[in-house]
Length: 220
Image 1 (cartoon, rainbow, N blue to C red):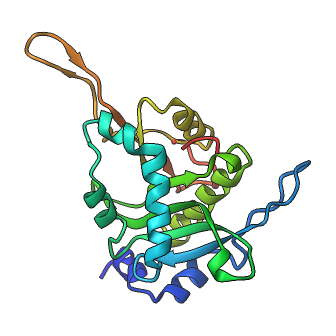
Image 2: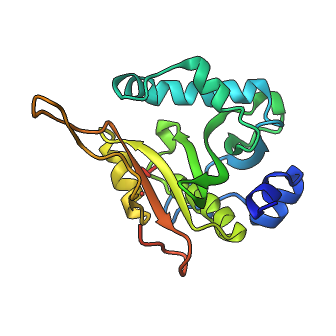
């Protein structure tokens, strides 16, 4: 059994203790008031149906149109099925209300330790934040937690898929050190000579260095 399989078979509390820091919440942004939220770690088998639906709604609200316009296409059924893949893990941003029933999910990042084109990687499946929490360093912090998992697990790189039309996201990922992966789809020339450009790009960042990487996500 490889280390990817061993990691994914760990009980959720052990996975968290080994790969994530004891304190998940980001430090307050300088000059900005502290926001009333925290970050909760879940697995696809432990996340509640209510929370899963809230995460799905964040995806649908921000990305359904982009999916529909791409070669991937939008399928609510397929997306919900993907969100429940056994090895998928969630970093959920929620309000800090004392009553669990009053807590509200403001964003999340889902990821998986897996294999991609022969490499051991940590793959970011989704990252979404409510508009009022974007551009405050929270997205960067969520990405750093995911990358920490990858480094602790000893994988080669962090990877993600981004729609080419989402230039805000492309710039965000580039700032984090991501660039186009060697397996990202390339333009294709059709029989009539027309060049068909890909609608999405696969970005990656090496995790085998001092933590900065040399190879892409959205200022969130």
